[in-house]
Each structure stands twice: as C-alpha cells, then as structure tokens.
Length: 620
Image (cartoon, rainbow, N blue to C red):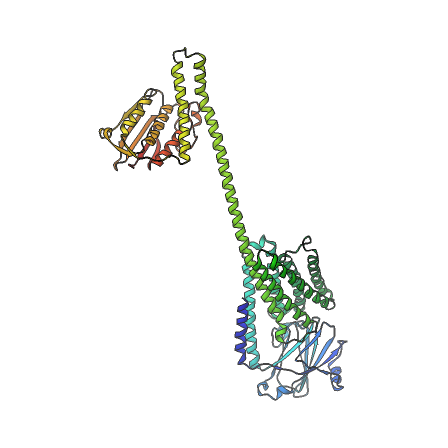
C-alpha cells in the first residue's frame, strides 16, 4: 500500500508538471501582541517601517497567543498576464482559526474578506479545504491578519484560476485514494470478528479510527463537508484528534511491544505518562491552556517514540516472530521521523514547505500500513494457533471417548461374564455336591459346561475379530453337509427342520468354512434359546437367482418377545426380558461381523409371530 501511495504521488506530480506552478509571495511581518490593533494602526506601523521583511516563503510563529499582520507584495503578479482575471491566494495549513484579508480596490475602497476554520465554511465565498481568497483587481499590497490558537504556521501560494483548479483536482484525488485505503482497512478489521475478543485488535481498530479522524480534520475535510455550520467544533477537533491519537498510539504500543509493569516497569511507566499527557492536552483544549502545554507534550512525544524505537529494535533480535518485530520497528521509525518533523515545525524551530507540512501524515500513513500488516500476520498466527488447539482438543476428546468406550466395554464384558457363568457354575456345583447321584445331574452338568464353553468360544472369536486377526481362508467345502452337522448337534435340544433343494446337497462352495460354521452355530443357537417352547425351528439352505448362497433361520417368537430390530446386532445387547436365558450378547454381533468378512449381508425381520434371519453370501 505504501507503493500505492508512492505511485499515486508520482502520477499526480507528473500530471502537475505540465500545469502552471504556484508563485510564492514575498511578505513582511508585524507581531500584534495585544491582538487588538486595527487596520489603521497596522497601516501606520507599515509607514513607520515596523514591518520586518521575512526571508522565507513560509512563516513559523510556533505556539503563541499573539496575532500577526502580513504585508503581501502583489506587484510581481500584476505584471503577469495569467493573473489578469485575479489572483487565487491559497493559505495553508487548513487549521488556522482566523484570517482577515484587507486590500484597496481600484476606487481606493478597502475590501475585507474573512476565512479560517473558526468561521463557517458555508459563509465563505469560495469554499475550499484550506483558506482561499480571490483578489480580482490586484493592488500593489494587501494586508493579512492571522490569529490562531493552534500553532502559527503560514504558507501562501498564488495561483491563476486554471492552475488552482488543476492542483485542487489532483490533491483531492490523492486524498480520496488515501482515505479510501484507510476506510477499507477499518472495514476489513471490523469484519474480521477477532477485534471483539482480542484486546490488541480492539486498540488497533480504535487507533485506526482516530487516525482517520485526525487526517480528515487536519486536512480541512471535516469542516468542508460535515461541520460547515459548526466551526468551533471543527477547530477543536484538530487538537483533540492529535491528543486522542497520542493516547491511542501509546495504548497500541503497550500491546505491540508487550510492555508491562512487571517486565518493563520504566518503559511502561513512561508510556502511561504519555497517555496522561494526551489526556492533559484534551483537557487543555476545553479549558484554553492547550497552547501552554503542547510544547512540552510535543517534546515528550519525541522522547517516547525514541524509547519505543529502542525497545522495538531490541525485540527484533530476541523475539521468535522476528518478521513481525521488524515491521513494528520500521513503523516506529516512520512514526518517529514524522513526529520529529511535525513537532519541530509546530514549535517554529524548523522551516517548512508544503511537503514538510504533510510529512507527518505520510509517515504516519506508512506506519499504519506496516502495523496493519503486523495485525494480518497476528491474525494468521492466531488462527493457526486456534486451529491447532482445536485439533488437539479434538484428539484429546477422541482419546477420552476411546478410553471411556474401552472402560465401558470392559465393565460390560465383566458384568456379562459374571452373569453368564454364574448360572452354569451353580448347576455344576450342585451336581458335584450331590455326587451326580440324581438322574438328571449329569446331563445338567454337561449342559452347563457346554454353556461355559460357548461363552468362552464367542469371547475368543470376538477378540480375534476386533483385533483383525481373523483371516479369511477360502476353501472348497460342502455347505449342506456342514450345516447338517450343526443342525444335528442342536437337534438334541430343539425341534429343528432342515430343508434344502436337491441340487444343494452336492454343491461344492468356495468360502471360509470355519467362519461359515460360526455363522450357522450362532444363528441356530439364538433360535433355540429364544423360540417358543414346543415349536419348530426352520433352517433353509438355498441359492439366490444370481447364484449366491442363501441361509434362512426362522423361529416363533418366544415368551421374551420379539427382538429389537435396530439393536439386535449390537455388541452385548440383550433384551431386558431375556436376561434369564444364558447368553453373552455376542452371538449375533459375531454373526454380523462374520458375514461382513465374507462379503455378504444379513437382515432380520419379524413376520406375524416369526423372527426371520436371512444371510446371503457370495462365492469367494
């Protein structure tokens, strides 16, 4: 953006090079310490030679309560044809309070014109951001009275009408570019959202807004466009904005340079003193002692910027974010150069032309751009840091969730194991205590051992399955014969009807026979446990139209009710009504996982009083 400023300046200067340039005006000065002299008194002083010729093209009176009279020599303009339609007398800077121009016309009558930012812009004949007088019939001499409560600086330029409007157009374009950039930065910062939460961001936004206010008021645009009928407020806003800017800059540098009472007590205290000086200056504007305190405040600002510069230079070598600190150092250096120039000019210690008058604004503008770049880097760093923290938080949350899940799984497994082994162990204990003397003791004990074996076997299968240790080993086998053996095993404890087409009885299938047997065992075991007493369990083995293997197991709904279709394949899930039946809650979970391993799919549905499990498996 600094390049934009530089490029725009070059373009405007190039465009102005072909236009007539302003002609400087020679003048003599007379100081009116009483501020009460009239034109007649001044005219008499002129005749007595009390006006002192001024060697420079600009006048520096510093901060004073005196009024000054200037005798302007207009004779050189009368001899040039371009001024035959009048002289456009432009007086800068825009923040001069009272300007009165007196001259005699062709008829010997004294003409009186007024300007200044303590007079309404709306009442001026030629409204312009700075004071402007148009002298149509040029006399030999004119008298200009200046009285201001700000610093007494006077730069006068004589223009032809054409040259004036050309220069005004170029300068307004340049200011429009600068204000456009500043307003864009302000909107950009406000829409970032971080300024609501981040203290540095809040201070920087306030500093940027005050800098824009200072630029608008110092260059006369506030009175010209917004406060045309409130000249007193317009005049007060110039020193007020400067003092508010001092406070805002001090607060921003506390954050940028990481100043604190504990780590940097001296520099922190000096910066707080700068804030207090700004507050005193603001009070001085309202109670009319601003002129008395501003020289001391100005010198302290130079001292303050110098110490900030040393601190910024030190941080460029010690900080981790070196590039940011280099930008802060350059911004501080730019601010220091501008402040030295401005303050020495305002105090009347340094001669100034138009470029020097605006040097402070240019260096401050560059400082704002550099600090804005620092803010952009800080935003990116904060976003990266926030994303990293969010990622770490997410990882921690996931780890915690996994830990909680493992803990819950362990608790559920132990609860299941203690519950499912308790009943068969009790049966075995009773049988042993009776020395297997009762007729049914031995079968019951054998059944209890079988239940324990099933629980252990399923736990082993689930562990291998979840640890991905179960490998699919496709082999050729006869599914009808394998399923027939499983049905024969369970036929001793349930009424099972096994059917299959004749073509299936000799079918050779390619898949993992062990995993297929696990599927068959658990589906039939589940049907036997939860079917209605004295009802038939149907097991069907067939093929789909596309040649896939089809296994279907049907049973009537038992006294524990139908299964929860949505949860029947969940690990450890058992219907609350089925807790009396020995089981691990792992059988159907294991079936679902085994079907997935073989690339098939399984579904369960209820039809009237039937529960139907259907498994479809492809050939491997």
